[in-house]
Amino acid sequence: MAKLRQKNPRTVRQAEEVRGLEHLSMDVAVNFSKGAQLSSHIHNVCAEAKEAIYTREEDVKFWLEK
Image (tube, rainbow, N blue to C red; front, side):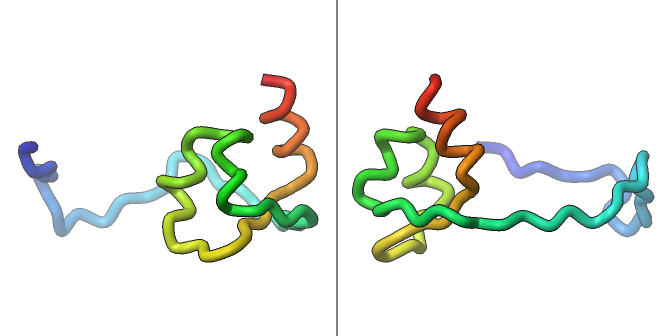
């Protein structure tokens, strides 16, 4: 796989839009070994998790509806 390179790596870049802070409440614990039933991406994204991962209830409902 080729390395990704920027034309001007020392250039300071500015965000295109300004967003405020977003506070998320992770109110659901999911058993890591059964997390793949919710989303196939969990094992790749949460590879360092040992026993459980934490998520929002809205996310779990969304995954279950899919």
